[in-house]
Length: 252
View 1 (tube, rainbow, N blue to C red):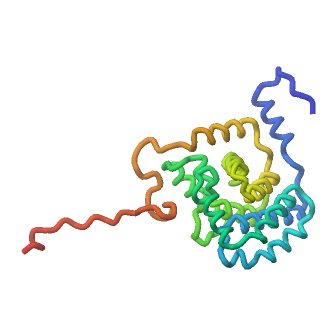
View 2: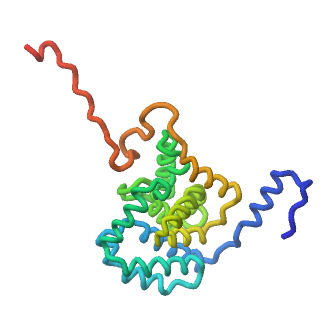
View 3: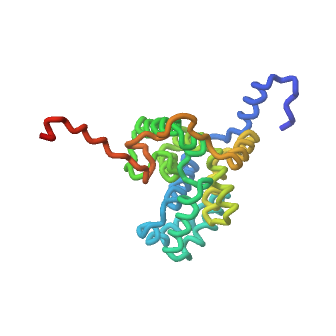
């Protein structure tokens, strides 16, 4: 496509470029294959507990019969390592990559909002999005946990279902970059996901560079970015309610 003339207003140029990036409508078979890829990514990005590691043979078989695609190539590279590695080593590596490194956390709203009150609102909005679509999570993870977001995308399809992934495109890019820098095999899973999404724009890449250098937003006021209850992150300390003042008659 030839460059757009500089005389065209900027807003028109932006919309034309966005239109050229839109892919053609997918057939039902393509949507089904895409859903399978997303579901495999959701499973493989979960903590490798006994149930998941016991199912590695079935997962490898599912990956082996995927139609050729960039995403399938990345999944094949990952599953080879995943099936060979000792389960204890898998668990240690997972914790190191996703629990101990802020730049590869799987909680997507963190990259947009950091530990601020805005993140709590974003989590609430995401949970409401799931409920509006008729999908209830099991409550074991926050709604922005990447495996949860991927499962929603697999169930609901490329439009509505993948909207949260597109919204958090920059966070996904940073996770992939961090895993690549760490030479983690999990980088293949993020690369597979990137292959399913529109490529990042220049603005996206610039924002990712700033995010990597400066980190996510910080809370400017107050000491309680999450509040307590449903959306407090795992391990958050919730102080007990203060005891009632001792009344005079209680001391008699």
